[in-house]
Amino acid sequence: MYYKPGCPFCMAAEKLFLSKKRNPKKINLLELGKDKLEELSEKSGGWKTAPMIFIDGKFYGGYSDVKKLDDEGKLDNILTTQQ
View 1 (tube, rainbow, N blue to C red):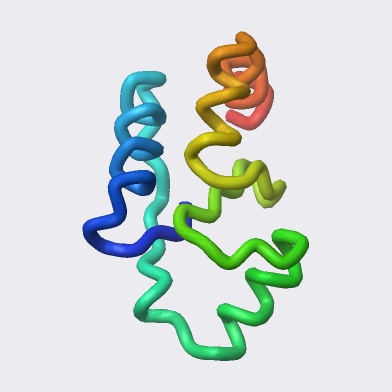
View 2: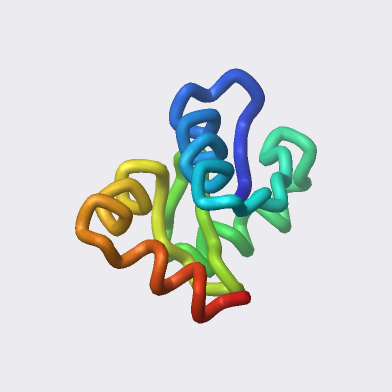
């Protein structure tokens, strides 16, 4: 999970993953260089906001997107198959 310090959506995403007994690997977007940020934007289809959530290398969006997956009962399956 790529995040920005103090971002409420990033904190909510981390809390969601911790509630699933998953400790997300966190990478601070502010510590990345311009080249890495451009690479992430390409991998995510132009996503520019935090958090940027990847699960096993696949981009799933931000907090609202992952929360929706959880609300639909799909997140547990994604996390289970990605162990």
